[in-house]
Length: 176
Image 1 (cartoon, rainbow, N blue to C red):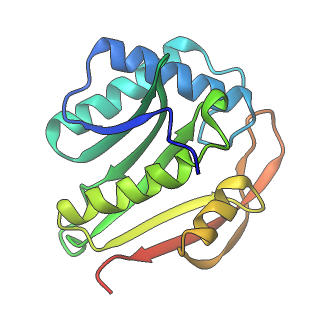
Image 2: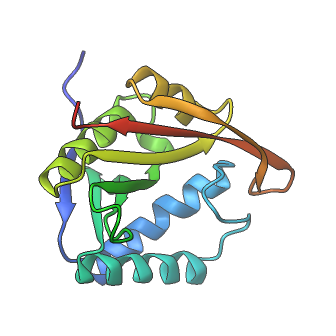
């Protein structure tokens, strides 16, 4: 396997340049028909507003934000939602695992997932939960990485350009 052309790091503070680059990644993913909570076309203002909210969560300690950077800037990201109900202090939700089209098929998605799992453990989280479009690339990635498939919820969300899709729910027990 070749040496990665990107590096990974956790952002403990998110500035305007990060938000701008993260908005680019989100818009690219939505334009590529990724079902990641947004409809096409995703405006820059909407994408920036989303990332500003994430930045607030990072600043408050309720989210961990990891980014991958290549020579052109941020090319991938994943989040851990750390702020959970008081009876679930051991759990986090993994969300918005996004890879810009220019960085796909290079092992970046798997690297982001492994980094998220390591970060979760550093944060005292031993159970991770996520969902992915049924039959999509992300679902295959999570299965390949050993995440446990819980089941499918039919008609869960709309694809970015319309039409319902199902979601597959996964978990990963990091404490075992």
